[in-house]
Length: 81
Image 1 (tube, rainbow, N blue to C red):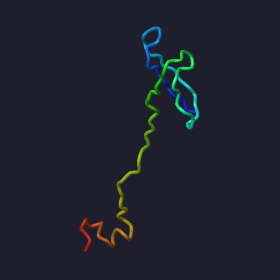
Image 2 (image 1 turned 45 degrees about the vertical axis):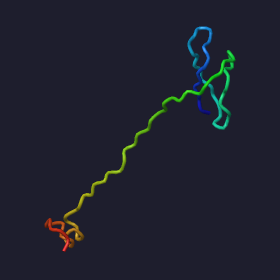
Image 3 (image 1 turned 180 degrees about the horizontal axis):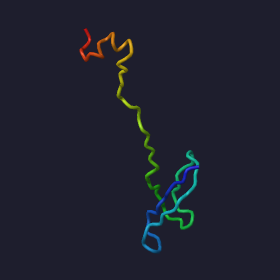
């Protein structure tokens, strides 16, 4: 189950908004009031864990000793005929 972060909208006794975390199912409705104080709350959007993957290399290495390379002219460096 994901953890959602909520923040109170109205000022509490200390004057600062209170943030708290709540475990909920993804299909549960968002909370509208703080379970402890009863103040109205809003869900806070926070950054997640970024996953970066290396992509495929886009270079091609030609084996100049193969029969295909000599047939197309890649060994000599000339363009296709």
